[in-house]
Amino acid sequence: MGKSSKFLKTYFILVIAGAIIGLLDSLVFTGAKETIDQVPMIWLAISGIFAFGIFILSIIALYIFIKNKLAKITLVIPIFYLAITVIVFVYGMVSGVTSAVQGSMPTEQLIPPALLTIGILSSSFELLFSIYILSKFK
Image (cartoon, rainbow, N blue to C red; front, side, top):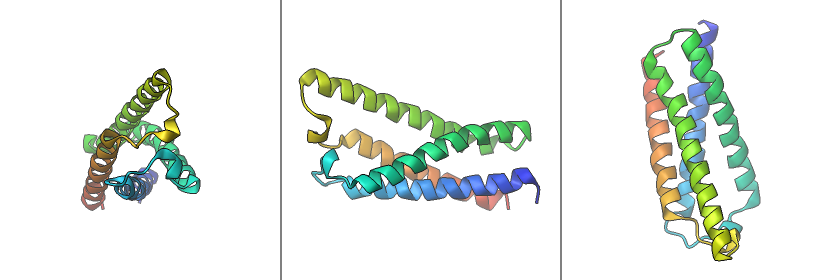
């Protein structure tokens, strides 16, 4: 097994773990009237650090997959992960600015349903597609 195939397997296993964390994160708060200040800080720290790690790893994966001329289908998850992270970041920034203009503290607001929906759908896609890639590239 070459270095690129070991990296491919490791990357997609980590993406699967991240997708499971993302699903748990979104599903725990779906339907609940949770506010941001009620989310355990340790959970926010763990999921945030893991998401940031996968973000950096996706940039590296994109470079390695292109450099080693792996099948183009392997590029889907790194590009998707980078795009969805930027979208969620922009959504969070807009939400924060809106909160500031309205004069309310971000911790007093409900977690936006759109953010939960994006989390569930994107994590589900990452999970299923990563499993597919791992089964295809044994």
